Length: 123
Image 1: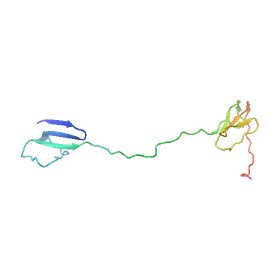
Image 2: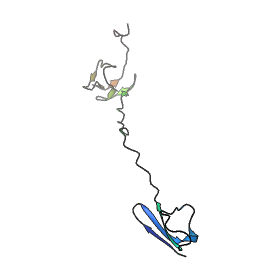
Image 3: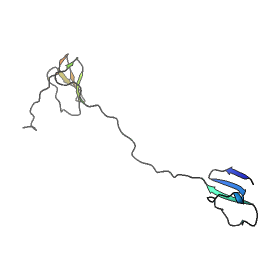
Image 4: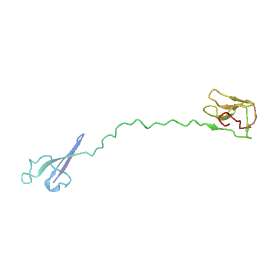
């Protein structure tokens, strides 16, 4: 008895003695019968997995690192960022400036002093 295996792109063709056949391999045609001969051709396809399809997700932007960088009573040097924010939740006071992206920064060396002032919303 002999086994001959040939690999093609999508299937495996196995030629072997009829007594060595596995139960999982099924003949492709019923032309050959056990009484006609010992060599039979069988085809078995390769295990494949179909593509899952495309998606519009899978992206995410990095965080902007906003927030208070120096708190009340902390020493800062000139040019240090005190608060990074979107909008004017925190306002620049004495010796502090506000950048075009509303970043509050120190104009001189000193100690940060934060106070809460009443706005029209809070009345």
